[in-house]
Image 1 (cartoon, rainbow, N blue to C red):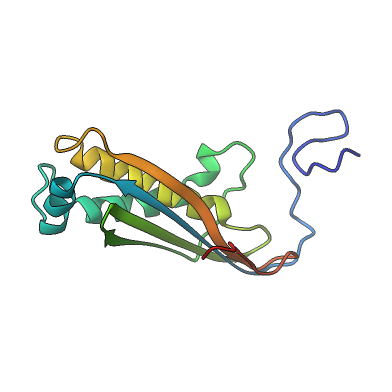
Image 2 (image 1 turned 135 degrees about the horizontal axis):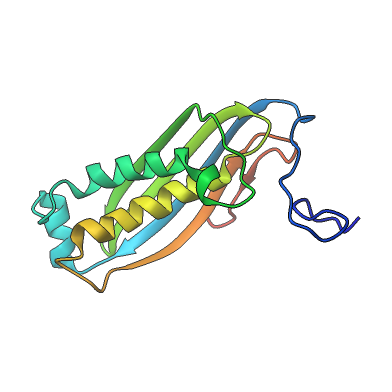
Amino acid sequence: MNGLTHIDSAGTARMVDVGGKAETQRVAIAHGLIRMTAATLEAIRAGDAPKGDVLGTARLAGIMAAKKTGELIPLCHPLALDAVNVDFAFVEAGVECTATATLTGRTGVEMEALTAVSVALLTVYDMAKALDKGMTIEGVRLIEKRGGRSGIWRADDV
């Protein structure tokens, strides 16, 4: 045995069998930032972006993406999510995005939260690129997870 959960004894990639695991309440929170010019940030804040409601559209895109994670990421289990929340905050450098995914199940929702943040921020870029093609997406990461055998984990710097 090689100790890697997604590799079998022959070195072949495989989906982990979670059938024997107990169902527990699971939560994952991910975060990321899109940096932009002050003018672009103001246009988004004021609702004056050329394509319309940037954050409303990005919120919907993030939720939809979380629901499709099992189709996008190889070896991810398709999950029946209980909830996905995508929130935004204006900061001096741009817009922060935080996504929380929850379910009661046998495997975690970290990838769903990370996918929600990633697609939400990509959607902000798409909705505002006419104003600022130099926007950068950065710092997409898991900041907290709860549930399952490993219990609670939280990033040290949060």
